[in-house]
Image 1 (cartoon, rainbow, N blue to C red):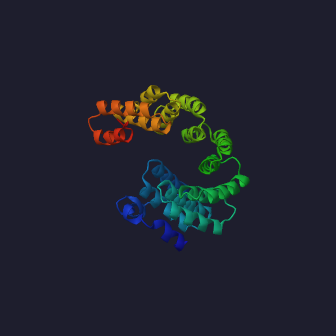
Image 2 (cartoon, rainbow, N blue to C red):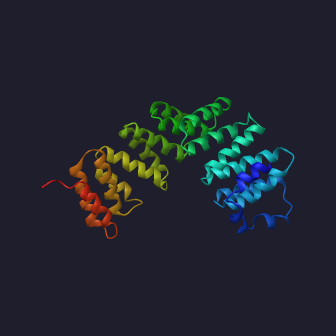
Image 3 (spheres, rainbow, N blue to C red):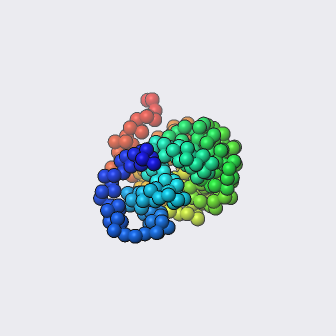
Length: 281
């Protein structure tokens, strides 16, 4: 337990010192369930130091709440972008409870976060065999397959993830981007267009929809989509970049020129873009 604490608390203690957390709660008497729920509420709000302070007392118990507290802290590390501490934490938990599916899944997702696609894939397949209905496992397997170019397999995993976890925007967005990487731009546009109508505040989804549109040469449509969350100059520049990917240099130049005319703050960058597609006189 002390090793786990040393790994997980690195980088957290100074944050906790500014929170109401441990010192304040020392005077409170909370049930384990209340302690955990307070941690979950803080995590959902993005207050990771407060969440940590609520999970920590659970790890000192002698019952099942101890492992739940450890899992929660490992997940907290992963959610906050600390993939290496999360990986070490999950590995320590698996030494204590080697068949715990949540820890198997967590280790796979931590490996995924560090870019270790093959090992992540193998670890997530272990979790999948033990519980085939965990949507995060299925989504992770889709990402891992995308990263190694197995787009058909990735599409299958995303489909299973949507069945297991409902129409979660994260999974739909990943499925759409997977179709873009596979060159299935029309299919990606159709999927993401429906999803954006349902989740209009999901900017990453809208961004990928615009990419799918621009990859088909529908630059005006893509610019209109980008303009929902960006100014016109940036939207036009994005379309210009995709035109370059499409090897449509003449259209890229036109889009960059339009971006330059529309811009008041991005002109140095746009000028560099224009120079990159300047035609020889």
